[in-house]
Amino acid sequence: MKKAGFVLLLLLLICGQVGASSNYYELGDRVLKKGLEGVDVAILQQRLCLLGLYDNAALDGIYGPKTVEAVKELQRRCGIKADGVVGPKTIECLPLDIPVSSRADYSREDILILARVIHGEARGELFKGQVGVGAVILNRVKHSSFPNTIREVVMEDGQFSCLFDGQINYYPTEQALDAARAALAGYDPTRGALFFYNPAIATNVAWISKRPVAERIGNHLFLY
Image (cartoon, rainbow, N blue to C red; front, side, top):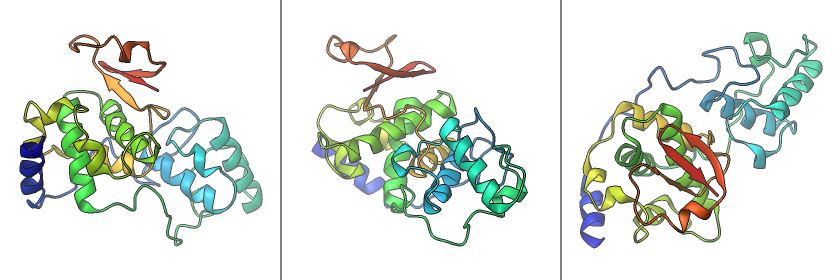
């Protein structure tokens, strides 16, 4: 574990670009409506929180009924059609010039650590599944049963296989970096999960297989 941590620390000194891909949407890139998911939805929810229209504890990047109702109330206040769909006119009603305090307030090192674990644990998975791995780490940071920093959660003994097989030492892909950014912005497709595993290849799963399943995304089960 100490050796893995040392190698990780050295690799984090390497600078890289955190770029965007077709899987990463900024607010305004697309029309938002019920059923969509993504970092842009998470940012929308953050802005609605600032206006007192949305509960910060419910921020998950998933455009569900609560988001629809909050958007409709925003639209009514703004004097535009209250249809719960976010297009350019609705975006103009949001406080875009006000800083948002959220998961996005993390360092570059945090992004890289998160992206390395995503790359090591979920390379080849759907983008949504990669975000899910990042979300699990962030959910642990907030949970009283786990350490309260990304680095400490990742380095906790026996938690992530990529530390043992060396995959955490590979520089993450652009998609993994985007997935880390999406998770840090509040997108949580796992709906609060604290664990994940691939039942097709995992061993010694007697304890984890008994935990409640939150979501299945790609090859991974995400559990509470």
